[in-house]
Length: 276
Image (cartoon, rainbow, N blue to C red; front, side):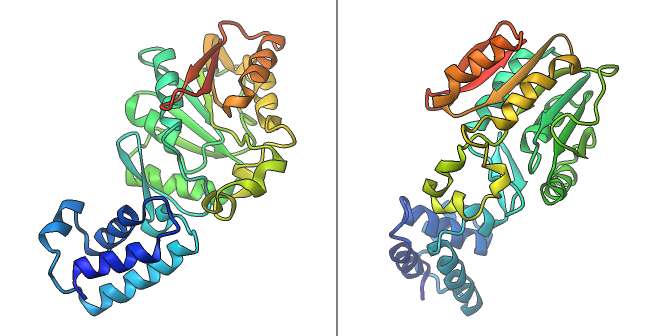
């Protein structure tokens, strides 16, 4: 089977997806170690039997809605490639907006930063690489997620990123406050989990999605516990569902936070909230 024939076959098998041709090409390029443009130069080349067998296996797994990122073992975030897997949430492009808003609000040379609920470490490690003279702690209650964060720490040489097994900001003290705390915590309402896309519902860890009855259980806890852990003027930045924005703004106001701002994500939806 040629490259062109294999791509046409894989695209047909993946027709249930929104971009079957793109996903077929990405799977094949991953197996061959090619950039996508190479496919068009190799269209009439015959695929080795072992590559064809591997492609058929990957297509069957993707057809069953196993995420493409899990099949490839990595995903992109803020211009870098991170290892990913079923132990942690697959990072979404919208979360880059959270990272950018946070970086725009903290000091030019922060001393200490906290990524609460770090998962695979994409936010915390990105911060560590952007601010190499800062200490960035990344906390999570999942050892499996922190193992993945540790892999990414080594993969990207982020020696100033510290993965910590704990709940939110559990072990930290006001004696050594942070310049900023950023968090992409679970914010899906429990009752909405079954309606998520299969790639999310069946493959992302439930604990990384389930935010309780209204999606804000962990957000409430962090909003109430964070103030003593921040320097004067320190920033809290959260990612939320746009439908929760007004509730979280009210929550922050009642908890004594000031300068609360609601910011859009890449698609213009109110997904980021910052407060001092």
